[in-house]
Length: 170
Image 1: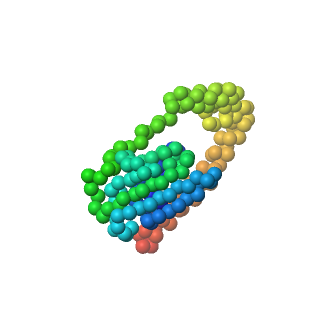
Image 2: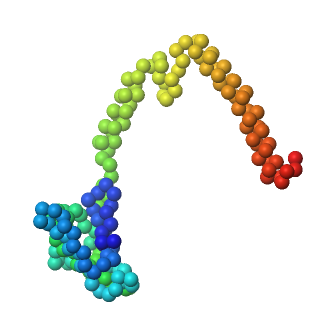
Image 3: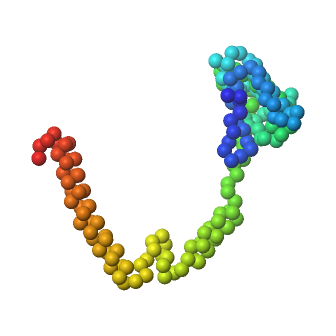
């Protein structure tokens, strides 16, 4: 645990206490991220008292990719054993970004157009309708035969289940 928790589908990271005193990550192109934590041992000091990003006080519980990963830099965590409200961290949260209404409308219209462009004689919702009377009658016979075969099997299964639950008594 390096002290950063990524939020899905966003470039935002929530802050939490790191499990080590020093970590250095090579970001490529000569850029480096260095994370330091001070303020006690890592087993009992689990609360973030304050944070410095590139040497400056940071007053949020979160940061974005561009704040630290784009060009590299340093994160300095000060940890404590008891959660306090007088530290430099304030309860500010990243702004939520809902899916654009315009994007939802485009997806809906595209799906609706595709559904409507299907041939009306063979497509109704999700069930394909029979084209001829003979095909419809054959499907009805298949349904009737499958019901006649399955009903006794289901009834026998229910009988066996009830009998086993009653301890063998009928």
